[in-house]
Image 1 (tube, rainbow, N blue to C red):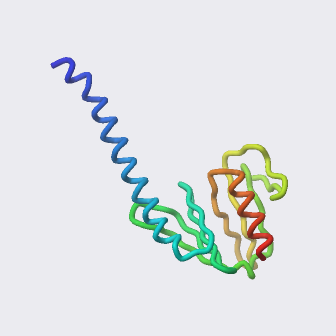
Image 2: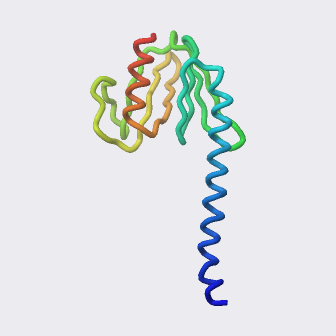
Image 3: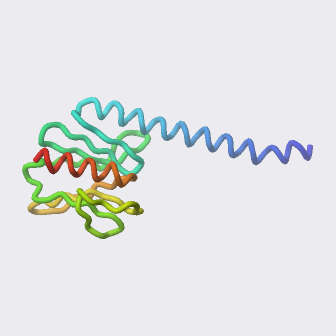
Length: 133
């Protein structure tokens, strides 16, 4: 009986890992279906981003689909900036590392920040979109 009680926490961890994996799989599948309509798309745990022509669409991934979806035109964007830990960096010379990473799109009436998990990916997207304008 003692051995059974020792294995019980391990069983609980295994069940939690299986549930977490299924949850993430649902998010990725929802993204995959959504991304088919775009020429270029990215997924990470913070945000999804899709580009079709001069139109950019972004939102937050959840297990049941994407939420807080916003669309804007690159024609309206006045500047694209790379934010790392609250500081602005040039897209051509990003820092080596940082924790809070986002691309900031300056529009006439508002500012949109799309979060990224990886600094090189954010810089690459920023350069591409800046050249696409």
